[in-house]
Image 1: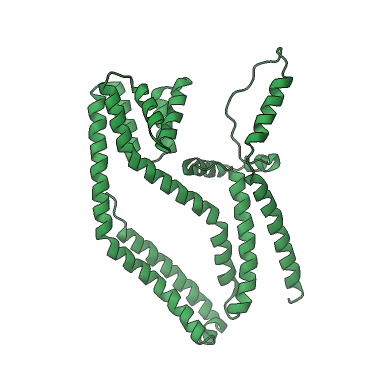
Image 2: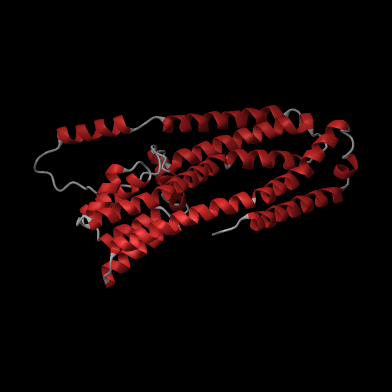
Length: 328
């Protein structure tokens, strides 16, 4: 076993270096390369050639072999949508390579950390959290960026609705209101409304363009806006008044959410403390008496007790999260 460990470390380091190389290669912007390719194609293009394909291509990776590989998996659609919602520029292949690199690094770190600090603990309980924690970090980062972007979009939405309502009152068309939002407001709402306006200009029906907007930004308040516009176009009514009422309703809900968050702050802090106490206590006991847990790890029943304890802790975390999460 001792002679096999250096070989295993060498293989892990080699895989980590290779994955890191491909990840760093994907970091480089491909805009210059794409511009040079298009200019070269235009310079060598014959006037007698057929029609040029102007459809937008889905790019999963800068590397062709990885793009072809990822194109065979349907789950990549969800990752592509997450990247689009997060507002980042890298491809799904980049984040997959980074995830694999971090997972390999986590395996290596866990393999070195376990025998040095927790020799009595089964390796799976040390290595698996390292691998999962580091491997899932890129996707957790994307979810964080998406949540942050959605929150900013939601905070900008009342002002955008008021802007469209004032444009309608001034006698402009609905598309003019969308253009005003895209030009006057910052990202992300300005960018998303610009995409919707471009779809309309390219011939997509207004109803379909608004539905695409609601699919890109999955917020309830935005869905209310889209539904209101679609119903008004089908049944008639004062759209400016509808948008003003919707903007006022969103602002009042923001106030109520803030009030609820203040009232539930104590319960949320109590939940964090209750979750942290068992792990902190176990770590302190281990520092004070490293042999305290020998009977637990040497007995096969101790492994089942640990698995059951972690499982019930996870159930408790989900229950407490459900209790302190109040939707308005």
